[in-house]
Length: 257
Image (tube, rainbow, N blue to C red; front, side):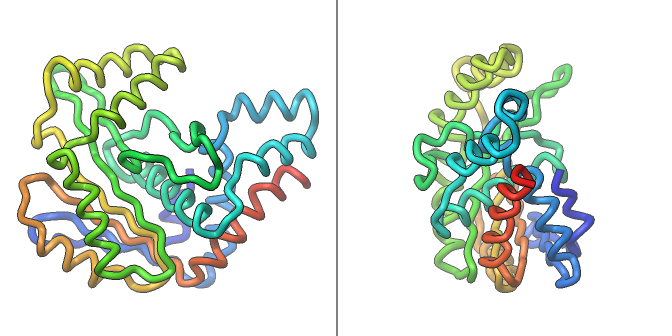
C-alpha cells in the first residue's frame, strides 16, 4: 500500500453530480511519500514470487539487476508508468473496486506504453449484485492542461464509455493463467453472455501532476453530459519530475543495500 492518507491532504467535493478529489502532498512529506511509493513499484513490474525466487537463488545484486532491466529509463515512460501505478493503488486503497492484475508486468518493451484502457477496477458480484467496473484514464504531466483533460475524455468515452473488449479479454486471460478461474469467469460472463450496461460502469480520470489540477478537473466534470458516473482525482506533487526520478532510483537502491 502507498497509504495516501499518510502523505496527502485530501479535499473532496461534488461537481455536476460527480466526484472530485484533490490530493496535495505537503513539502515535509516528500521523503515519506517517496519511500512508500518506491516500496510498491516492484510488484507492478514483476510478481513478488518472481523477485523472491531471484533473491533466494542469486542474492540482492542480481535481483536489483533484474528489476533494473524491467523498469523504464526514459523520463516520459517513467512518468506514465508511475501515474498508472498510483492510479491502481488509489483504486485498491480508496474505492470499492479492486484491480485484479498489475498489467505493467506484461509490457512488451519497458519504454513503450501499453494499449487499451489504462486501468480497469472491478467490483466482483456478491449474491444478486452484478459485476461492476471502473474504467480509468491516467495522465501524468508536470503541467496539467485543458488539452490533457480533453484527451482523457476521449479515452473514457471510447467504446460508448464501456470497458473495451480488448482490455477485458486481456484481464480474463491473465487471471486464467494465474489460476484465478472464478474471477475470470465473472468477467467473461459479463462480456460474452450477459452484456455490460452503463449502470455497471463508472469512470475515473486520475491525474498526477505538478500544478494545481482542481480547476481543470472541475471544468471537465461541468462539461460532461453523459449518463455514466464520473470520478476525477488530481494528485499534485509540486516536484513532479524530481519525485519520479527519486522513486525509480530508490526502487533499485532498496535491493542493492
